[in-house]
Image 1: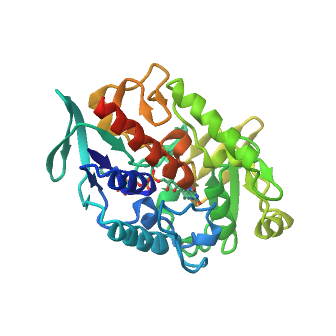
Image 2 (image 1 turned 180 degrees about the vertical axis):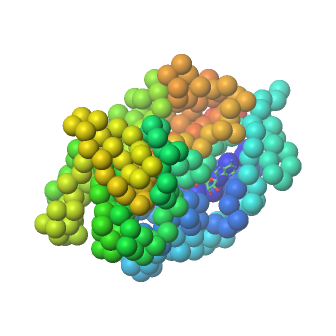
Image 3 (image 1 turned 135 degrees about the vertical axis):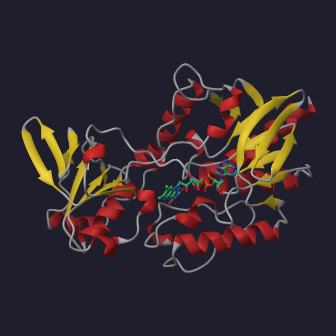
Length: 339
Ligand code: FAD
């Protein structure tokens, strides 16, 4: 059995495979433990994340003020060692094809075969850049949140932050401390006063689950739970920093423009905090795409290929979802292979 990816979803699957006494290996493209967390911006602290679930069987400890990139990399490394998980890295899987009794994986470190696959490759390597007319004409700097270098890099520049999710909000608040910002969102942001409502969370997950069952592209679980009104948000609102403009019609060489009513705005930097897509290019040779553009998945099982499970995908794209998905995938995959 092969698990592709050693983030939360891959490690959870590995944990359950180990417990079941299965013969398996985890292939991970990164140089070091930590999944996508190790690449996240320095200002993302554990206590500013959106609630991080422990991996199964070993709690995450440490200073809540610590950088998430450092703390999570250390935690994942300890986890792999504690459960003696067979993680091979750096091994990037380039192409997965079918064989008579399973799959062949062409990787940067040779070919592997597997009777069953758990794919847990996350989204970090596929930042999403929306198509905007004129994007290539803009003469300033454009970058995606995945490349965020810290607010100080923008001192003295006018920064346009694009996106209505939590990452956009957090980056906007930071950058507004050092320089001028403008926020644009496709829809008015949904604010959440008070604690996170578990019912709303479950409803959001159920919605994404419905989409992937129907073979549609998943959409984000974490983004539909509302933007928390923290003390920082209250202060920024009082300073008038959180009144987003609607999405512009296009980019211009010096900024952005709206058609209705006509208006332009000059900016130096466009920061696309516009999310990510599932990193599944290596599965393309399996031809799994449904007419709706996504991969039809029930729970974690790919409907068209029951020996392949997607974890950390769609409804399980959160730390808690990834934990559960690892358990479900292993239970079902072992049953499928035994039958
Ligand atoms: P990842 O952590 O991305 O791990 C994927 C692994 O697969 C990586 O190690 C990568 O090297 C490897 N890989 C990728 N492609 C290949 C390949 N072709 N071959 C081999 N290996 C490959 N969720 C929460 O629950 N709470 C939060 O506070 C939270 N904050 C977030 C903040 C940000 C900025 C973002 C972007 C997401 C956040 N999430 C949060 C979502 C959460 O991080 C993930 O859904 C969760 O960690 C599951 O990760 P994963 O294992 O699916 O993917």
